[in-house]
Image (cartoon, rainbow, N blue to C red):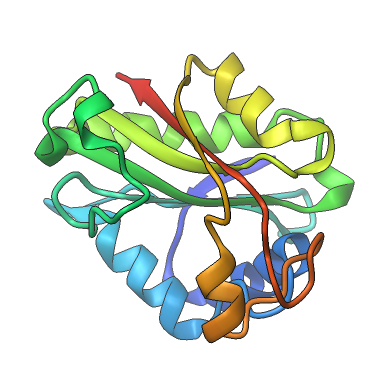
Length: 185
């Protein structure tokens, strides 16, 4: 297993994997371009892929650099341990079902954190899918040192109603919860 910086040649595989794991229309070409751009600062890219021995993309992690992402109504900035301009954002992770449970997620997270620190971030926030099988997303982020800040109902409802996202649990009307979690560096 190799962890590599995301580049444009990986986009098709990342889109396919993201939609397989999270549901139809979760990610598209415009979306991955934007994620990649928001995660690049000072010539350093904070988004990574995992490839297996056959060079197949089996995981990816996108992360936004501090100061390069929109803070929205789902962000509890008054509860954050650092200034919002020092807060990075862990946007997306997807691990192929055949590669889950093999430590891919923690390796991708570590690679992103290492770069985000070099870029000057002091912490990162994520909105984790609480309905993931066995609440695995929250468990993995907690094991990495992430702390729960707040739980948000209907985090992805607008995405499903107005942008064509089809949740793998709820379908076309997503009522899944998000755990807003912070990882200090």
